Length: 115
Image (cartoon, rainbow, N blue to C red; front, side):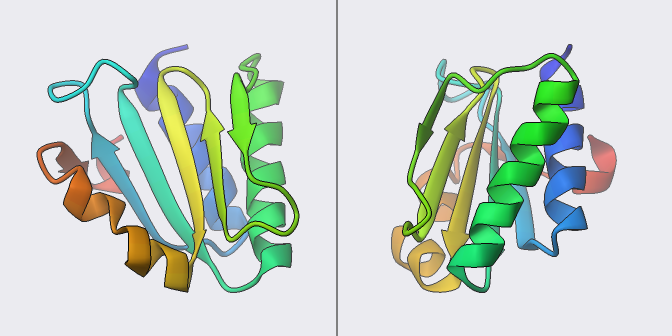
């Protein structure tokens, strides 16, 4: 499966669980670690966990297994590494604090509808 198709699946799963402010950054030109970063926010730890589970289930059903997950039920930032895409799920406060969009501003912000 191509990385943009993986990103579409993940974004759809996140949207289904009311993720807020979903951002997709194409980092292929600036880093070899992945093709896309997907960044999303949630309102509480239960929602963050539901977003994580939904994205993982959608990708797993498509035959894509997570390589590594950082964060647990008590975390306010969850990182899910699928090699070609990396999903970051944040509380609103942590997202503002870490500001990955600023750090990765050399990447190309992708309109979700263009995936």
